[in-house]
Length: 288
Ligand code: PAF
Image 1 (spheres, protein in one colour):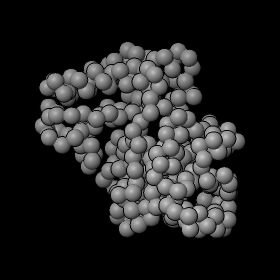
Image 2 (cartoon, rainbow, N blue to C red):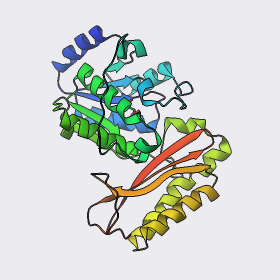
Image 3 (cartoon, protein in one colour):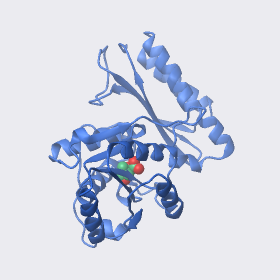
Image 4 (cartoon, rainbow, N blue to C red):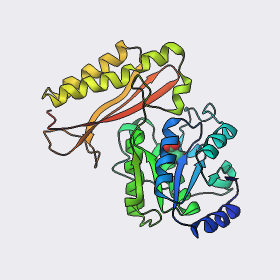
């Protein structure tokens, strides 16, 4: 496994690997956990070579967010990736990704509006911009992302479709189901911010979501199930709820009437220093 930090050697290495078969990219911000390693394993089963990018992207953090505090563990991450049989780690510094004079921004409307796009203005511009650059730098045949960031996945697919990206084509952008701890909490690098008691309370999030989904699927009103969900989070130790919404799973449009299409419950809430997000599928008709 090689760790590369500059663009020219990256391009040379990628072209050499390409001669041996498909290349899969797993974009990450490091501080790797079992969720990331699951993406790597899926990527490995689909391609001859896996490239993992590790880059804490400043453009997707707002002014008052956790850019400085975000965990950085490059040596530990590389040891984990080596054990998984990854071929290449792409770990540029910010000045390599955004050199002096950098001035281009990619903004995807529609799917990036509301939800995390509402609470974190500019976040998805930063994500779309860096992922487009990563695709151009590595030119992977396939790319793997966690479904935990459901809205992010929708934004990236839309961007790839709209910009006619062929490497990877939008159909080769693969979402991998969320990996959860034993108590149901979605794995996230930000779980490291939680104290022991906050970590215990954080399990309220998936539990309350499952309760809300059961109520909605049983035909209860969506708005009262969501109100109950928010109350349970606050009672369970969360400080505030950014959003708890039922959306069309694909278009991410708000569901304000009964529908047959698959739906998704998406939630973001604050506990301690962490802002946690999660999403789960909802089947059947949803009632307003
Ligand atoms: O999901 C993440 O870790 C990041 O948003 C991504 C896709 C690596 C872009 O920085």
